[in-house]
Image (tube, helix red, strand yellow):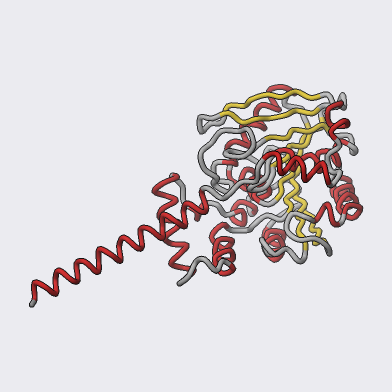
Length: 308
């Protein structure tokens, strides 16, 4: 009887272990390989909304280049330079998007006299890369883009970094944990901490049952095992405390994907020059399209306040 009980116990433990491993693999898969929008869908959406006028975009002086990522793949990058100045903004798009989504912001800054760099994050658009890491590896790719800009334009180049969603988190992680090299940053709807963002998403996700805490621990373990980094280290709020350069924080009040209180938290943490704009209208990553005049005016004020 004892032997039989041991065998049953072993089988139950084995089944539980397999179930736990299966859940961990499933959760880490959903995070590492979040479904990406088709390039044609993004292009058609931006053209249809008249945020991208193809004739105008095609007429801009630009150069398409490939930048080597320190992770071993190529980053598709477009340098747009209609102005003779050494003033640039680098744009970081959000998860599931690509560089085409950055064009609306690019146009805004071109109208303010800046040149621009748009690029595809790893695993998005035309860039290489196997997984999405929500800023961990992306911040190092951003440094490669910054290095390329400085090599081309010289150490006296003046530039900012604008990021949306994951791109905003990437910009903050770059500035606070890699190098605070840009002259200014604009963080539009970033998450403040990846673990907290995952908890928020899991609570909303009806496909994931059980304890969010357990789900996050499992996902964290399998991501470390499979993708080589700790989700604990993807924490813009820790990075933001070290940023010295000016940061403009932007978020829509009614964002249903990343809560606006995360940006308010980041604003409170930031020491030194900073500005906060909580937009009345729009959902996630819609602060600009739903509040164009206020968004543009806020940027003008931010730049003027910081002598830029």
